[in-house]
Length: 241
Image 1 (cartoon, rainbow, N blue to C red):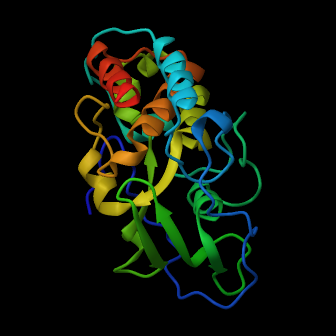
Image 2 (tube, rainbow, N blue to C red):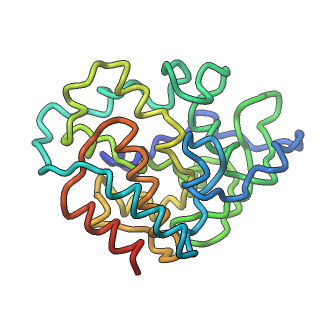
């Protein structure tokens, strides 16, 4: 599978069969509301369904600045550091000896089994995928690892066009590995998203579309990125409906 600009379909090099090792934290796999998860360390993406939550969602989205997309000149995935680095400064989960991809699998999965002899690599797990709205029984392997991918909620190339091209390298590395901007999701849905903003792509699972917009807005606000007017309007519509 080709690497897309917005959602990094980078396979984990450790595509070995799992072993029956200890499961992850029993709380793993329970989806959190983005309103209650400002640092991205809690798992998943829970729908926002109540009137008060949707009003709070609109207040987050309304804080976004808007501007047109800039050119993609000079964009390259490597401008955000090598994929799934554990050494990005200033983000949760970094520096723990495990790469970002496996950190996110452990955060979002449940019934996790680790690769034999490894304290980091997830060999098998269950995922309640927020994008497609289905349960995935994931098992690492040459033909199956891409079934679950790690999505950059605000795609890297989108960020590049909206101002990240002017950031220092360490800020781009932080952005690419920040768990607030990362979700373990269905691989096909992730590939379909590409580098789209919310005006062009939203999760097929309609129940999480408002929550997705809030998460997109939270990332943009944290990194002082504007969004396009069309994307802001799309996020607002999903939380009004």
